Image (cartoon, rainbow, N blue to C red; front, side, top):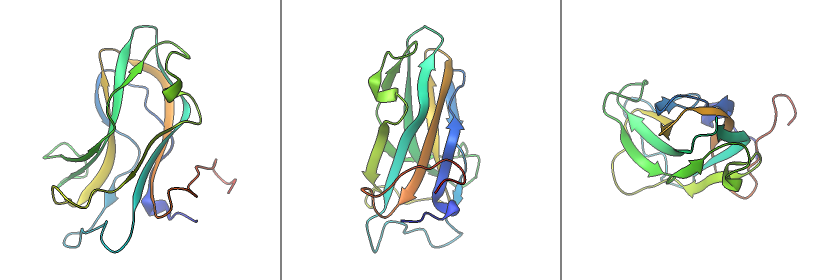
Length: 155
């Protein structure tokens, strides 16, 4: 399956950051009026680890959320549509779920619940400490089984 770049949030985007909430990659503009993005077929959110996510030695946590907002900065009035749950971080190789090549999230887009607002994006919530390394890929796809992140120009 070929993904349109407009369906890709992040491609090898760093999540290294101090504790807090940060947008991961790009934000998708769903348009001013038509936002029923999950109706008519299965749409999946996939987030995978490109480079291991670690901290400088102090234990911390990260989680990823699919959010929508009325503003592209995703902080005006964000609505959470999906939450990955918390992943513990630490020095290199402490959490095998955060290792390079792992899929963190593969979930069908929620159709029920809060209405999607105009701007859709992924945020990473880092708690307790600074994440010193890590890159992720995140996209929407119609086929969760055939999805794969490729390096720029390799596909």
